[in-house]
Image (tube, rainbow, N blue to C red; front, side, top):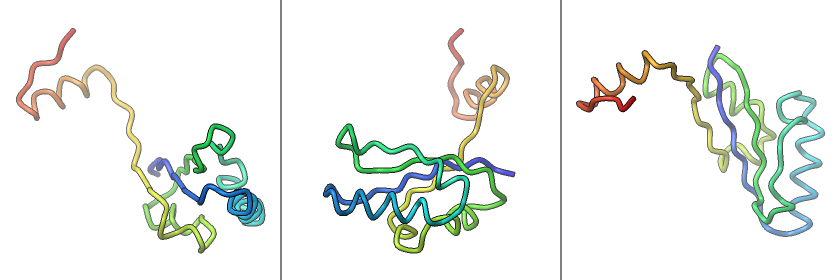
Amino acid sequence: MTRYLVEVPHENTKVACDRAIRLFQETGSHFVTNADWGCSDNVHKAWFVAEVDSREEAVAILPPLFRQSATIVELQRFGKDDLVQSSEKHGARPSS
């Protein structure tokens, strides 16, 4: 399975915040109901990480209203060997 960071924006109004939170809570998906929200810091987005088989599956978790506006980012973790390979691939030497 692949890990995806899902970012879902909504408008900067109390009505929009309340609607987004309500729709997330009503989905029943443990990913969505445990989202982190930035509204109290005036960043009107929700974020969660989903471990699923595809980007399409990550989108399908979302309430339909938010599917088109969401940003889905495939996540990777890198170890030291990965850094060396990445640097070689990009023609640079890794710093130690």
